[in-house]
Length: 156
Image (cartoon, rainbow, N blue to C red; front, side, top):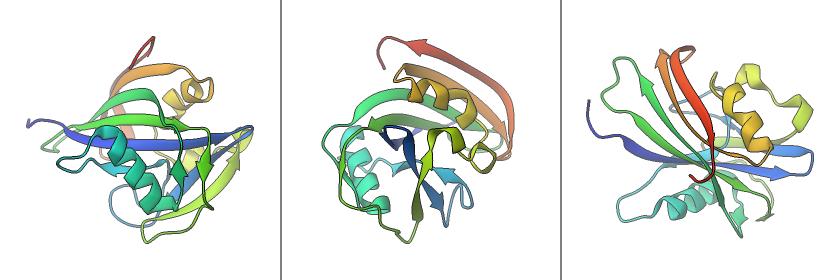
């Protein structure tokens, strides 16, 4: 298996609600998710997170809080996904639909876990409690978790 590929994921949280995007194309199409993608060559992980948030939602963040680091493995896939997860509590702009994502606010008690990646229901509660975490999820296809580990940490 090759070296893992770096990815980012940004979740915009406000009191009592979270902004998610419906993925319209590509990997994860048809699921609600945070905003993110591949880190480009010559770009820091945080710069990649800011760029993806802006490209996919039209928003810019004053501060990104790094809250999680999760490695995903998909059986039969040549590389693991090394995902760095950020929380943004304050953003500028209005959420705007892009070619890739359709943003929508959800009340925290109405997060659509059934239409999200299966692993989200494991680590999202930690994110909402503003805790930091590290994890690993091994998938068969896109719907079945074969193995996982998840732990709260002091620093990511």
